[in-house]
Amino acid sequence: MKSLALFLWLIVPAGVCLAIFLWGTPHVVLSYRFYDNGDAHNPLAARIYISCDYFGVSGWRTDAAHAGACPWIRFFRGGGQ
Image (cartoon, rainbow, N blue to C red):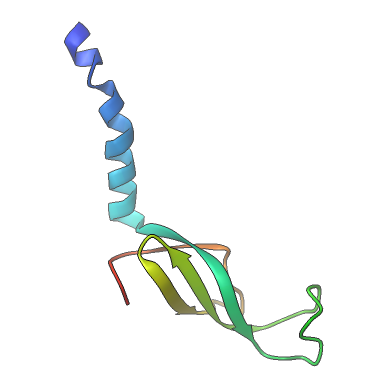
């Protein structure tokens, strides 16, 4: 039973690999494009986003905005574009 306990640490890496397989790798939004409402430099202005650029372990990914918004973190499957 003692030797079995030595392999418990493998649960965490196996869980990370399973999460990457199911959902993909995490990417964070660093750039986006939106319809200009005449107040482009006001961070509090209401905006409708067109596309979002994400950066993560597989590099840059561009995705269309969902319902006019860009989530801060997205999960993408697979390698490059």
